[in-house]
Picture 1 (tube, rainbow over the protein chains, first blue to last red):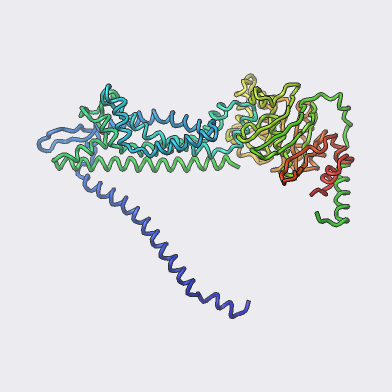
Picture 2: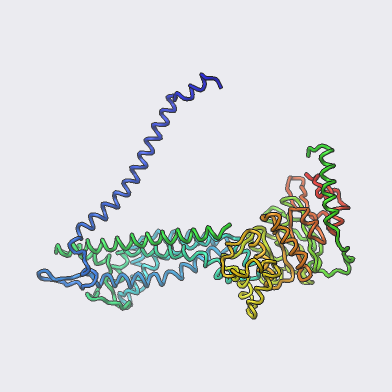
Length: 300
Length: 291
């Protein structure tokens, strides 16, 4: 290569300069979009925290709400927090076994055509609006049996199912076929192979899916309005056969009140809910990383 | 294939020399006096619309090591995976012909593949220990198959037979994944023989291992063949010459429309295959002149 050609390479052409400018522009746009996402989260969390600050104390979690309170009465939303715990806990208990079994069938046993069909069904289920699920459970359970925490958790379980199933399918697919072959080659039946060899590899991933699903439904309001909102107790109530107050429904009701103290309590409850979802998401991430590392060690 | 005469002559003489040294062994009794394990007739195996093997007929004998050699894509792996119904796991797979195992056709649709794999074990190309402890790797199969009596004793015997016991006896609770590749493969052999199969199929068991680990596994085959029958697929002709009593040579045939499938070319005593093959294609392959 001659000296003249070399110096031509060092001197950028107009075309190269234009490309570099476009590149810088696109980079900036992407950076701005990312910054906007972070900023929105920051603004939401900080404004919720600021407005609820006056009511953000232990009383919120332990004291019962007092309707038509006169003067400064210490009150909280203990009924909403216990109710949410009961309903989300029951929903998780209902959805985990079903979701895991669906995933095992789809990934381990179903012929390819059924597998694709079921995968589509799961994705469609994930896209059903929460309010539609609420109306469905209202028609199925509430008409005839009345509202109850059980009906509410059933509605939430329907919403959680596709998330748990999808997450479990993904981790099952990560388990290398060589492990299945090793077990089957010993003369182990398929179900023993699945339970004894494949499933233990996926526990971390399944827990992650479960925790993410919990985070997703903990803030659902619409299905609970239909299924567990009328005639709720003001005190801590753990009976799943009663209609129980929940955090999102409480936020909705308090926000409609004309009392400024109620508004502050709604903000405070929203902040607690946000923190709960943030923490569950973080722990899900931590568990997912851990199980991925474990799987990576297993695969050679 | 472009090759000078000088190269090809020196190459083949080296291989012949190596083979002559390594195949010194007791002559086999005549085939009529050997007990058959498999009697395979007209086996044709197809993946989707692609034939992998066509019209294969051969017998496999008890307490011998039978090697299957041949170029890549000649259907060696397909063949041994037919012998314990492992191909059932491939959705598009389909086979015709009969595979009589001690007289019973195990290729028949009404035969339970789980029962077949119970007596015909398999060791795979890449070591695939379970992500469990060394002990549990061997014990899992025993537990699943209900052989729970004297579990510790059975585990020790299998690990001893696989020449691994001395290396792992002090750390049976350690993860199997902490073992070296060669140790993992011997663990897989221990796992396979712990459940007392009749036949052990090995799909290139040493191809991912270094020469020392390979030698250990070949040694194992010599010691264990009095108890089991082995069918071993190998890319390595010297390995076949060293370990096998009988050798089958597979090759690729091409149809008029360019389709390719694997075919059994020659099946005989190992010494004969390597020193006096009756087919030109076998001779070309074992002397390195194939292509």
